[in-house]
Length: 114
Image (cartoon, rainbow, N blue to C red; front, side):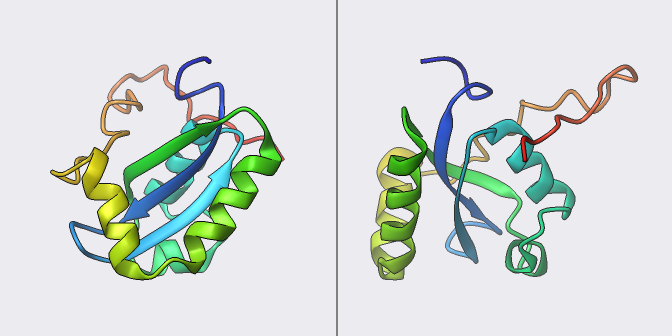
C-alpha cells in the first residue's frame, strides 16, 4: 500500500488525551484530516468539540471494509476506543503533525475527493 495520502482509512480524531473523540472514514486521509484541523469538515461534532488531532488510523483496501469498521467502532463503548488508541499510540501523539508544510508559501491545502 501507499503512504498516508493514497489509501482508504478508518480514523479517530481527538481533542486531547482522553478528550472528545470522533470516528470517521475516508479515501483521502490527508485531505480529511486537514478539514478537521481547520474546522471545515462538514460534520459539526468534530469542529464543535475541537477534534483536531489524528490519534489512530487503519488502512483498508476496500471502501466497504472501511465503512464497516467505522460503523462498528462508532458502536463501541468509550473505554474500548480509548484502549484501541492507546495500544498503538500510548502518548496520544498527533499522527498528522508533520503532514502539512504550512510555513511553505507555495503549499496548497489538499483537495478531498467527493
